[in-house]
Image (cartoon, rainbow, N blue to C red; front, side):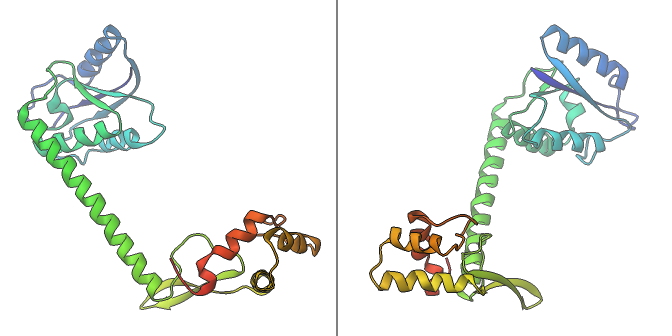
Length: 237
């Protein structure tokens, strides 16, 4: 496994654990013995384990959350080197596990006590609730914006253009007809009303050299998708 070696010493006089160099040496030896490849070493010197706001620690956690992370396990001399605050330990351990990274102490058995399992389950449930609640709030906000005539999608429909308007100090987006292309959309609907089929409409547009929504020619699908878009009837989704 690809591993990170994390070492920390505190300025606390009661901190009697090994020096940074001794911790790193022990972590390297453990990795070599167990077939791990140490790809990087993170060190926090004179940093308290009672807080997670340690430069190397936070950099390591950020690296673990990246999609292109280069390691699978974090090796520590003892779990107290990772965090002395139990809440921080549980939170960051659970967070790293979600990213596929294991925290392993080379001198202590894996802490899978019933209490830890309960705390981790509670944290995961809270995270799930927060995520679901946030999604509902976002959906509610987008629905409110749409009901007031604002455009909330990142895509702009063919024949329309985005216009920024002021709304209580915020910049929001509305749609308005785009000169030139709006006439093409009207032509599509007029042709359908006259009884023309989708292929006939597409051929007519291509014959006249009118570019489609993606800058290329028109086809049966692009004609249908344009005609089926509710935005042209005034409905914002």
